[in-house]
Every structure is written in structure tokens, then in C-alpha cells.
Image (tube, rainbow, N blue to C red):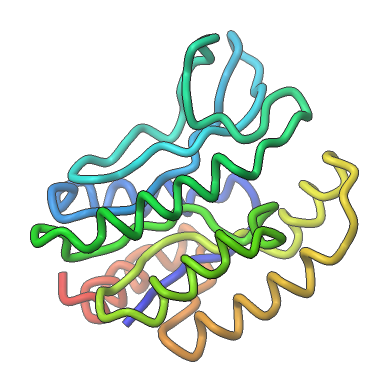
Length: 189
């Protein structure tokens, strides 16, 4: 069973998952998308592996950091391809009981390599938990990066796939207790 949260930007979805799963981080495989900061300003996004640990959701920029896939408007989708491949490999280790995909449904939707690996993860036997980028957030990203709207159709297909194999829950702070119960029940935590 899979469980993904969706909702408005900066609502606290990833923070909620981190709080709920941090005590079980040793059993995780997957990744977290971190906000990359330069001083007090957001400058991009980085993918950080969550293999037996739960990385922070925000990190300071360093010139030698790996995993940066968007920085100051420049994109590198190949970083996301490598991240999903690494997550899939790590999810096959004996100690992994849960795959974390926080967050999916963005620019990686146009990558056949990423989507093929994601399909294998979602059709596998291990439960997945994560955040599905909201349509509103995706529109915002596409506008800022000056990309076409093809990703919106691909996101809708991904949403349908997740719903067939699990649950999509709209996150709000008022619903945290109920979402926490669903997380425990659906994933056996």
C-alpha cells in the first residue's frame, strides 16, 4: 500500500512526513528534495538520499554539493534519474521496509528513465510514502522555469497510478491527526 500527500505549496507536507517517519528512519530508502538556500534566499533544489537516515528539508548551498537539479533557473534532470535509480537499488536491501519519495510529480515527469524506475517502485511489494507535487505547485514551477504544460498531463496520469495502488490524501494541519492514523494503518507503522 502506498500513501502520498498533496496540497498547497509550503503547507507543511514534507515537514509532517519527516516528523512522522524520523523515528523509523533506519528502515527508509528513497529520497528527499531539499530546498537549497544562499543566505536567506532560496536558490534551487537538491535531491538527498534517505537510505537509513532522513536528511533535513533545507540545506545551505555549497559550490561542491552534489544532487542539485535546479539552481538559479538551470535544470539538470539527469540528477533526478540517478536519484530514482539509487532509491530503487537501496529499496531492495534487507533492512528497507519503506520507500520515501518526497517529492515527485515535477520536471522529472518528462524523463522516461525516471518514470520507468518509478513505475517499478510503485508496482513493487514495498510500501511507498511521499509527497505528490500539487497541480498548482507544478504550474508555478513550469511558469518559473518557462516549460510547457505537457507535465500537467503526465502528473494527472501519475496521480491515477498512485490512486490505483494506494491513497492520495490532501494535507492540511487540521487533518494531521487523521493523516497520521492513515499513515500508520496503511503502512503498518
